[in-house]
Image (cartoon, rainbow, N blue to C red; front, side):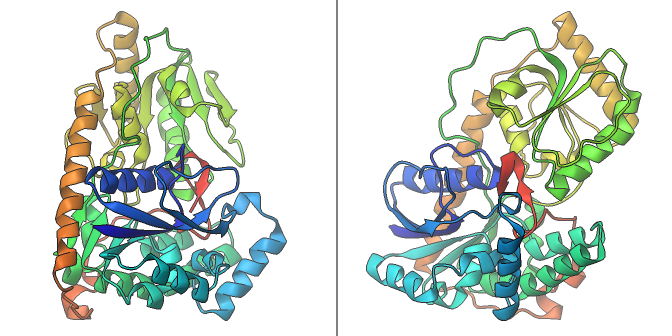
Length: 425
C-alpha cells in the first residue's frame, strides 16, 4: 500500500518524547510491513527527520509552550478564537489549507491516510476526510482537558482548559466516526470515544525503538531510585507530587533518589537523599544508573512510554497500576502497588535485594520482541479495513455518548503541556 501519515510533528531520527517515540514506532511498523509511507507534518527546530525518505514538511514549527514568548502564545490563542478551534490545532494553521490539499493531490494515488493524533488532523479535517482514514488516538484529548481544568491553578488556566475540551470533543467525534479503524495505546481508550466506534478500535503495543541496542555492562548504581520525566506535564506532575508527599516520607533517610527532567518549580522536600538534577544529557544512561525505577503515574489514559522503556532495559521496578496501561505481560522484576505504604515497602525491599545481589536486571529482549510482534499484527489488521467501507455510524447519546462510560482521567492536551521527555504536543 501507499499510505500517507499525517502528524503535527513528523517522526524524527532520535525520538525522546512520548509523542515522538509513538510516532516513530508506528512509522517503523508500517514500513516493516512493506508499505510505502509518505509523511506530512511540521519539523520541530533542532530535530532531524527519521531516515527512510518520504518526508513532506509543512515547515519548521516550535510547538513547546515553554520555548516561545508570550506574543506567540497570544497569537495562537487569537487564531484559535478566530477559527473556533483548539489551541493545538491553531498552531497547525500556519501552513494553510491550500498547501495541505496540494500536497495530498501531488501524493496521489494512495490507499489511505493515517491521522496521527488530533492536532494537525483537527486543523484540516475536511481535507483529510475526503479520503479513507485511520485515526491514531494518543489520548482521549477532550477528557484530558477536563481533567486539567479541574486541577488548574488559576481561573484563566481553568477557562482555557474548558474551552479546549469544548472544541476537542466534536473534532475527536468527527475523526473517529469517519475512520475505517482507530488505534489507541491503552485498552481503556478503546471506549473513550463511545461504544458506537469501539468495534473499530484496537490497542497498539509500542516499543521505544525498533531495534534494541546492545545491553550495557551492569555497573554499581549511582542512585537507589531513579525517576525521569517532564514534570511540567500535569499528568506527570500529579504522579511526582504523590510520590514526594506520600511515598518519600516513608523511605529510609539513607536511600538515594535521583530525579531528572524539566521541573518548573522544585518542591521543598526534607528527605536528605533526594537530588533534583534537571535535564540530563542521556535519559537512558540516567535510568540505567539507578538500582530501581519507581513508575509513579496516578491517572490518565494512553500508554506510559517510560514503563515500556524500563521493561525494555530490564530494570527492576515498582509500578502503580496506572503506569501499566497498555502492558500485556509484566516482567518478573516488576512489583505493583497503589497504596503509598505498600509502594514504599516494595521499593525498600527491592533496593535491599539489589544490594544483596538477589534481584537483578532482566533481559528486555523478550518483552521487546513480543511488543513488536503484537504491534505489527494490529497494524496489519487495521490496514485491512482500508479495503472495506467505514461503518459511518452516527454518534448518539444512546449508542456511544461518553456520559454513559466511566472514564479514567486522561493526559494533558496538546495546547498546554509538555509530554514525556520534553516534547510539547
